[in-house]
Length: 97
Image (tube, rainbow, N blue to C red):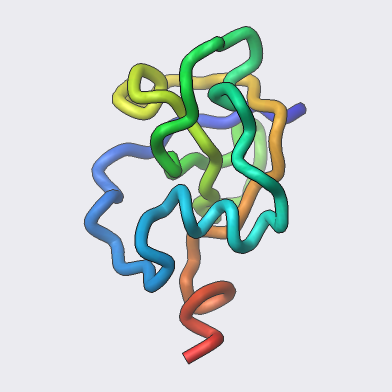
């Protein structure tokens, strides 16, 4: 498990996977989880949310499956139980072109 901070306003960033949720599925090599990856949330994972690790010197952004409610909460911190997939397309879907 990892503590992350939601970084909103990034949905317009370019990704060739179709959606950020598809990006997560493709590069995590995991099936979509049945629930939002925020611990103790029962919501459906509808969005590939952009997050940053909390308490880390890293400034990288990652994608995780979130429900609509958690995806919309800018700047909030959550404990997630999932694989973090880099949001930097130059490391992922941009490499394949």
